[in-house]
Length: 266
Image (tube, rainbow, N blue to C red; front, side, top):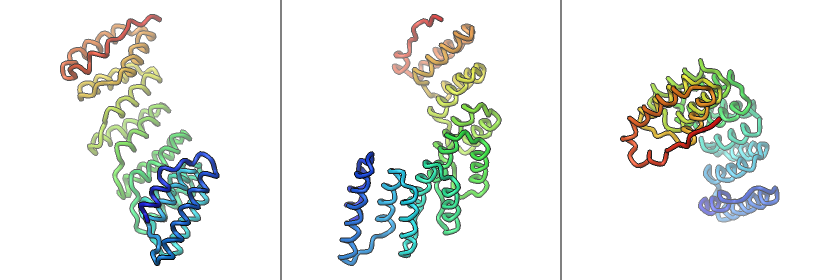
């Protein structure tokens, strides 16, 4: 039955309310059939339907379904709670999402990095640096779960975009100490953010570091840095960078052959 529910809910298109309501009705019919056969829907059954409510951005329905689960004596799992938190966060209901997070912990359900990432994504959208940093430090202090590489990348993107370099350094160092990263995405987000802020020295520093770590920068990163340096009258800086890249290019092999840049004219 759970496989059937998964098939009904997971791939369903939810763009129109009537489609969403049709999916929920179909899922409820499966629930009814299960009960007629003496099979009570379990935490997985409820989580599948909650997930589709979350995808459709129906926060109040998510909360109602969560309460129904608990009333039936079914303990929500981390997946269940995360679906609810994701929906509430993306709908701007952060206080309610925090209440659910606290309920998780009180109930003995350990939040995952994915749970916290729901908050960080919404806070990034709100440009709420202080709240994001507070939650991140709380996450580290309580030690309930370890930040994922995706967690770090969300925060790196947020802090560099908002020019909060002191917090960016803290996150970057934590990421390295934890052994979670950085990866190509981390460097790409950071370098593009530094270019946008015209922090040429730092952008070049991390660009070189990325190459030395064995990450071949995306062609868009090359071109954006190249154009930015030329426009800022830093052609000599670009030539030094290009020389460094050519020295390291042997480790990239044939991948590097496609990175010939056309001369840029201002």
